[in-house]
Length: 67
Ligand code: SF4
Image 1 (cartoon, rainbow, N blue to C red):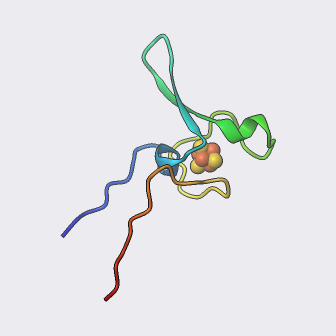
Image 2: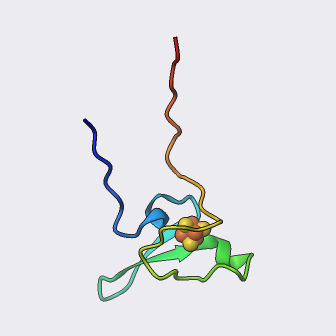
């Protein structure tokens, strides 16, 4: 059975609007691109994020065949 692994960043780790930013000290941050056009979104969300109205999956949808 396949088990699900959640990204430590939560859903930002799979969101099309997230851009990973690395600091000079090696810290990794998730920058939310939606914050540039919508003030409801913060530039650097507090991680992990588990719910967000702007979330859009960057992963391809799985195709299921029903016979
Ligand atoms: S839209 Fe939400 S889930 Fe996507 S990067 Fe921004 S804060 Fe994270």
